[in-house]
Image (cartoon, rainbow, N blue to C red; front, side):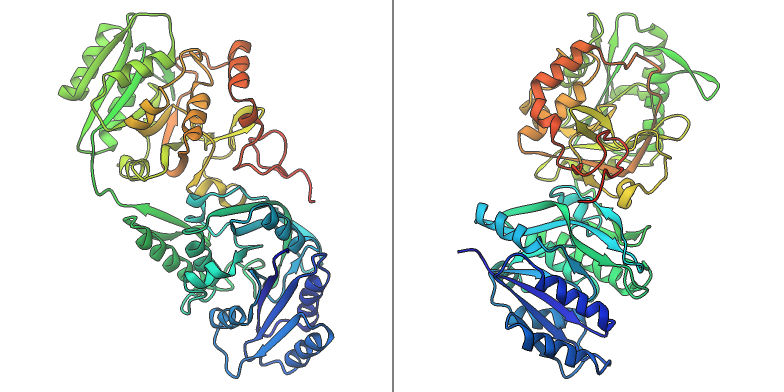
Length: 531
């Protein structure tokens, strides 16, 4: 028998026509086994109670409770939960709308996946003129992104027994009571499902965050506390900070241990013109790293070709001192082999793969990357990279048959769609121009694939890491310049295309963090169309 879904809707002074439309959107559901639990939180509009009572008289599936005093949205939501009898509870605000097939979609997935504990859908805004605008086509389950913003919230459906197990709605989190609940439920959820179509329309009103981000400033403080308690429950040593835009957060992990980091830099020791000055790129890369970062236990492994000028090695010895290790590579150029050779000589618990044409921007960047890389479940961490003109070079990989760089050549400090460029998040892969990972992960996947000597080796490496069940995290809080193409030709050959497609055909066709409703060219995050 299909599960019942209890729709929970706390009500406080919405416009009458808007409230009626919300109720009507539930009545229009094509799935029959539902109940609507409406809690009137002592609305001051005298017309609210009669409207709710009339709805309950008209359909036995609608249940109404009238509170005698205003308790706030968290307490009203808790009362609605107490009324619920369904196997699942769904969260619907008093001024929003459901797609007519929303509940049917949840029931279908619940029948397929008996262990379904939480689901969420794509959403869009409903303008004051009644137009569907600004769709938010979301990634599949991304716990790191949830720690940066409540990207899941609409339309959320949760297993009622699990909601009760984790304590239900908690007072003191008004405005982010759903966020707090979702964090606690997903910490324990067995199966999480993302619906890649718009089930929920979030109405833009002056009193709603959809219409005015400053409408409920208290909600962001509640969200911060919910995230801080989430970190504490999981034993993650971290401080949560609000940032711009409102509704996004920095989940700043603390550097509590400092295992050795082996920095592996393949180079030929070439010089190039950057910002009008001829530079020895590898020397300046290493100099910027040591100038910007005070991490206490570094070794610098330079994998040099036989053509590397002796003067470059001498300059590196002067800059690095006794932390320098030079490994010689005497074969035809193969980036993958050079990285693997460097790793074989590493003594660190962590490996930082770094190109020789970088300039570090962020001071003490390893204090951000190291605690992420050490966290259980994380396989690799990547950074935000800029071209010399300040445009964006790398914000993680996206796939659509072929790999791309996300938001390629966007302005370096744009927010990105739905805050994409300012939130820490999972992605399918990161460039090996700057990537930090544990040595045991590197060895588990066998290092980089020598068949891919120049291009796509990081794509293949990322997919190997993900195939072992590890997550890959991109952070916007580590910034570097990448003077790409200064030291080698990056254009992939047909041979390299053939290898990567043959090895990872299915994975390249489905990027779980890039919604199928977005444009086929997967570097711009432009939607195709509303469903």
